[in-house]
Amino acid sequence: MALVDPDFAEWLASEEISALATDAAIEAKWGSIAIDTLISSPLALKADAVAEAARQLAFRPGPIAVEKLSVPGKHIGMMGRVLNLTANVAGYEAGVDVFILTADETEQPGRTVFVVLRRL
Image (cartoon, rainbow, N blue to C red):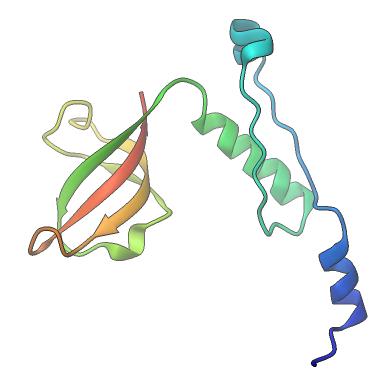
């Protein structure tokens, strides 16, 4: 059995760093029925956790749609990224930021089919 560096083992066993982000407008609107989310990530610094909490809070207010879009070209590497997509589809004419959940290059030849999250 391989030995683990004691400092690394201590870090693995330590409590995770947390950051709380709140939105007064959402709290005022939804009160006690507003949802709380907790997401774990491998961030090592408190400042990074604070920035990530703010990024997630900015994306979350309001409803989110799951949609499927076909775009020209091969873009499998876009999974997990935020892109600004423009398409001849309702809501996308002027371009909109979406989070790419999946990218399938096999469904349509020469195209990538994205499943995305879009704020409404």
